[in-house]
Image 1 (cartoon, rainbow, N blue to C red):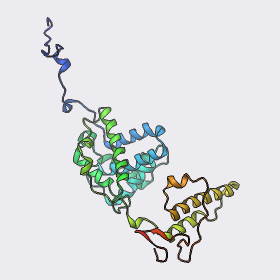
Image 2: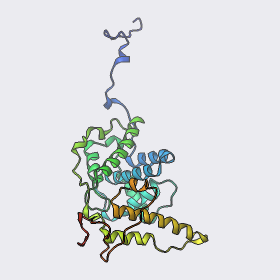
Image 3: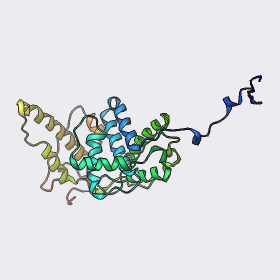
Image 4: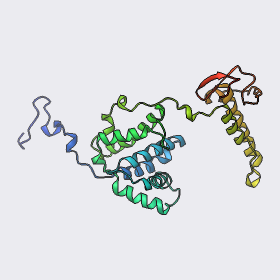
Length: 276
C-alpha cells in the first residue's frame, strides 16, 4: 500500500494479479500457416505412427493450398501438392523439381499469416477437406473427421506456442459441416472387377536377389485374404481373425459364386444369376 499498489476488494490480491487480459491484447509473432505446418510436421514426425503421418500430411496439404490470400493458379496446383507431399511435409525425401520449386515460391509468398486466420478461412478449408482429392464427390464422414482433427491439432499447437491468439476452428460447429455421402457406389468394384484386381495381386512376380518366392507367397496370402472378404462380405477385422481359411466356392462363367445364393455387388445385394 505504501508503494501505491492498489488491491482488489474481493480477493485481497493486487489488482495487477487479478486483471483479466483480453486475448486480443496478447502479442503474437507473425508466422505463416505454411511455415507452422512445416515446423509442426518436423517436430512430430518421429513420434507419429505411419497412419498418423499419412492422415496429418493429407489434411495439411489441403489446408496449405487453401489457406492463402488468393486463389492458386490452376497450372501450379499439381506441382504445389507434389512439393508439399515429397519435399515440405515429408522430411528428407527428395529435392524439388523446377515446377515444384516455382509452386513452392507461390505458396511461401501467399500463405496466410496465422494472425490473419479467421473462422471463414478455416470453414472454406473444411469444405475442401470434404471433397475427394481427385476432384470427385464427397468423402465419407470418417475421412472428414480425421482431416479436421489433424488440422485442429496443428492449430492448437500454434495457439499453445502463442503464434495464434485463438484457434478459429473452435468457433465452427461440427453440425455446420457440409453433408457427406456414406458410400459412393461408383467407387465400389463389382464381383468381376474384384476378382480381376485380386488375380493381378496373385500373379507372377519377379524380384532381384532371389526374393521372388517370398514375395510371391506374401502376395498369395494377401490375395486369399481379399478374396475371402470379396465373397463373404466380411470386414478386414473379421477376416483377419479367421484361424483357418474356408475353401473358396467355385465360380460360374459370370464370376458369381456357385456356393452362394446371393452376393453383394456395386449398388447392393442381387441374385447370383444376374450380372453385377
